[in-house]
Length: 371
Image (cartoon, rainbow, N blue to C red):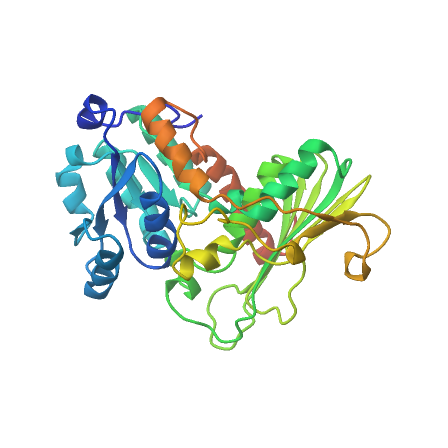
């Protein structure tokens, strides 16, 4: 497993009781909403430095984390690498590979927000570098700890659905007006568009559940006036296990479909609505402040059954397990401190990038791509 045993640096190794010092690069959406609060809430981790040159973002961060230090550029971190134990990269996609490379060469373990890279080859090169240096390289795939995904994993483990034949996953939104920014840029260097954004989540989840992909077919469209990157994309994966995954990511869905529809030989599971953790974090909620973290109301539970639509009362309610984003950084801390398993390896991310690259090619050439 890539980076499952790590060198946390001489100071961390000599002070096993001290929190691991974390530097966070980027304080936009990913950094401020997800990474900073989750790092700060994790026992054994301390948010030491935030890299941002934006005065407004510095002020925002200082209001919540008054003891945090700031750096204007990542190079400042490499100059004092012996004062840090982990670097988290939450900057724009095109910076992930160069920053992760620099951090590893500076002797620092790294967490990188998804997507790890623009290509599977780059991801595997990073994995090799991390292995060569004996350092952790982990990828932040937080949707593995969504409440509904955890519930699907439970149902599969218990055999409730029988043999799964088709897995449908939707990450749909209704945003008829483009918001702009690098995520919606048509410049390939930006690694924008929904295929690499939300697609990184739904593909990773499908591979975790049903194993490697044998072939991929995709449709990627630019629907909205003024949009430059794909905003309505469909991916079909045939897994080596025989399961077929149908994955939808869209910003143009006026009526949202179920988040999951999992169809098996014994029963199906249908679940509407999104995990509540992102909304809670956006609203200022923090892990550890409530026993109800990640819990959704019973009215949003999915249903398990056969023969009748859940919308007309078919099946039985299936309690949704609580979402658990804090588990990711708890696992990272355990990997660094105790040599525990890497929660999401670079090679797992590379396998998902194989699928994303195949999907891009399939949509461009209108063909099925065999892996």
